[in-house]
Length: 320
Image (cartoon, rainbow, N blue to C red; front, top):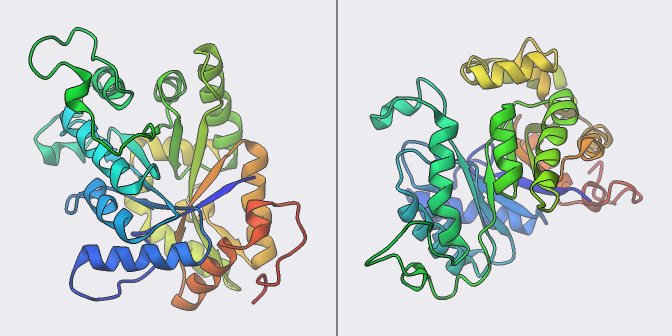
């Protein structure tokens, strides 16, 4: 089985109420009504993604809500733990915390240099993970150090933590200490030959369960795949220039970022997503792309049974 998730910030339009929280809640309801398993929200420089999903959780039941991803360096781990536990209480166990370390040239807007990011994340996890698990932070003493003081009643289900990891060191850290990884601009060769083997080995060596591998992909059910890829070449150009993403694209042999798109008719899209599952992906995080009609057609497909159970017969919704 492969789990389908949708990026709330990409391709779903804006209802236009003038209130971001109301609009994103409406989008999340649309995603849930389509039968999709997870709604993901990235963190930008404006809204707080954990805060948004805390509000959405109260209005949209029955769907997992995850951040993809929150940058850790500007937030104290105790503050981040409190935010995550609050979201988990609001969601009644449906919240997943995706974390990352940003990129050189982007982190600096917070007034922090991009310096030794993996070491910074490791130190962050030293405090964050014990609090999320209800344990005392190693070395913490005095007022505020009692785990009971950091607990949030109602957040009884442990908050899963995923890392935005592509490099070998980050993937090993994700496998050793967290529940998995969320990728972006990583194609089949990167997922099958690099991400899955490295994170899987690290988890096994640490005695942890098999990790979750969430693969972020632009997806469109379309009769014009070349147009979609050309549009994405322009839209993703700045991302493709970032070193970690450029390395992943080069590993896959993609000169342009649009080559990573999953595009075609319903059968072609199902086959391509199922191929990622065969490589070891547990989830796909879909950014809907294309025209409004193509995005609606894609969303209908994403809730269809063949995506969750790729070996089942075609659903009547396919091809509609």
